[in-house]
Length: 549
Image 1: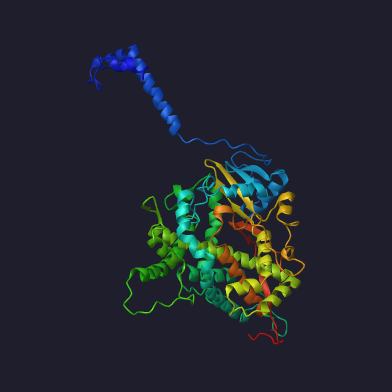
Image 2: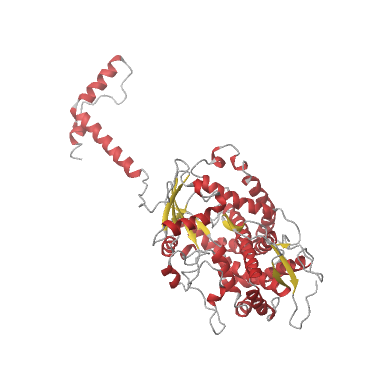
């Protein structure tokens, strides 16, 4: 203020907007030559530059990590990936080779710097800081701007979770159990009439299971989310192919995000690769069902009218019912603002349906494949399933009776459930975490009780007395860790137990002769690179009778 005082006291000021005349230029020059005015103008310019510097977003410098050699201009290390389908496997190999003790290295793909984190401790540290300090990058939100819990970060995530997460809590799992049993029964009935059943002559072609497992997961998720019976198990539903296409294209868009965002830049760009059409078909297929269910909440029921019938067989709430009830209680508000809109509610249903169908369906396919490869383990699991009436048992009884199923699921997800979680620190730097059991460091593996994390070994969790010990909370990372843990973790686990128990009670599983080796490739999740076919031999029950077709 003292520095500007001489300019403020100067009284003989020219007009701010001098009239356009030949003398205007001369007057402006005289003003600039005046030392008092010149000081005043320079001070204002300095203040403006300082304010602009403070307001301008700054990129934090991220320290350098061991680099993957062989990068090229523009392409970076893209040519070394062997295609997007090999992304997760190649990242893991780079971490093991160049990551050092911490399991962290960096590469460049299309001008974007990727910091690949595979060390257990480093992954844990990143997960603990989500969703506030470390957030998912905009490149991941390429599913046509869906704004559900899956894409939410920061304070928005807190509101979303307050409304959505209670539907996936332990208290509601029992209400979803009848739907799981009904759909699993349909699956077994369909397979009994399918091409995979081994007859008396031993002839069978093999039962394809990839779409069947996705159909099971989609039917259960649809009933649990908005009480719609899609019956995809018994009828060919093209929505399964659309879901597979959406997740495959989502990975491609993530890699191309920093190179050329054609789906945002070009007119109708979202339809060039088929993403817009696939999401449109999925959304339109669900919209009528969601709208009809929402109408039941909005329309007043006549006095004495009975509650509408539900497909879950319990009459209790679905995800949609619980979300609407939570919003009515004001749980969707933050600082007086209603952040949980109708669009947000619909998007949460769509993302729950997409994620539940893809992740659970793929995990089930891998689980049945691994059991078909290990006849002894399959026999032990079948013995447990035959000792309990799966259709009559409640959730707690299933968890107590089917002790070996949880280690089998955990070992399957450990081996085949590698997941890329790319949160970002902004700018052109992405962090891709390789999420598995404690991997890449021997110390972390010993701490988690895993001596061979790269092998399928469910018995590592079985104690000598036959009981099963639970893995440590910070060792099982496939569903996330910390605040940002997947809300559908318990639902997915219960789906897997019910489905596999029904299948093993009815059939013994084997791969056909000459079945090619099944590897994994990256399509957001690690999908099998080919169709998995199983031979289904009807299993004898406890009285020695073969299960009737």
